[in-house]
Image 1: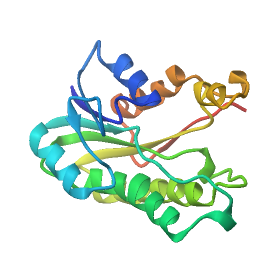
Image 2: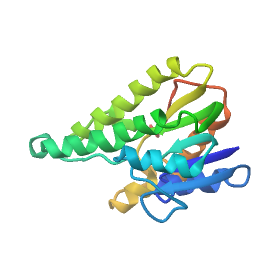
Image 3: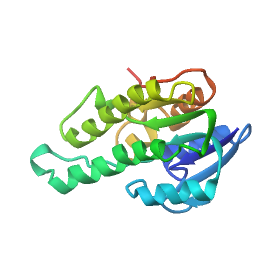
Image 4: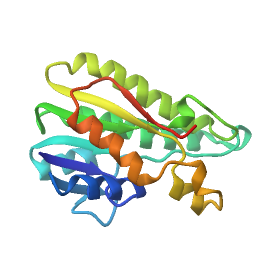
Amino acid sequence: MRVLIVGATGLLGKEVVRLLSPEHEVIGASRKGSHLSVDLADKASIVSMYRQLETVDAVICTAGAAKFAPLESLTDEDFAFSLANKLMGQVNLVRCSVGHVTQGGSLTLTSGILAQHPMNGSSAVSIVNAGVEAFVRSAALELQGKARINVVSPGWVSETLAAMGQARSAGVPAEAVAQAYKRSLVEDITGQVIQVVKW
């Protein structure tokens, strides 16, 4: 399959590229450092990316940013950034894919554990993650027969925890999280939230 990875230069994106490359034609896209340039927060950038790409069999998005901060310090701009980037960026990635993803193709987005298990400082992130999951469940109904769509919901990633000075063992390695994206790509499932957590 010809697979577009949006966020290919990030922690999870690199692992997904590494996992899928032996069996598929993988095209990377990100804000910098990839074959294709794309800014998720800019719909025109997404449209331009698809025009350069022509047709693919699948799109996997491991990109998207949202602001993590205490509720009382989050500004209107922080919420607007989060909604425009990780939520509407991924929504527009799906909306703009029409005509660029083959019939019956696969779309995979990314949410996160803070949708179901919020914590102090996660207000904006939790809204975005929950919104992505609700969108995928709804879009799956309307895309039936045209494309499959799922969302991977990672828990804490070991490498991220290590970078924060915390124990890697409390998270799931990025290599293992990448397997969830492969599952969404190859299994005949749609409208699913694929959770990858360590309890």
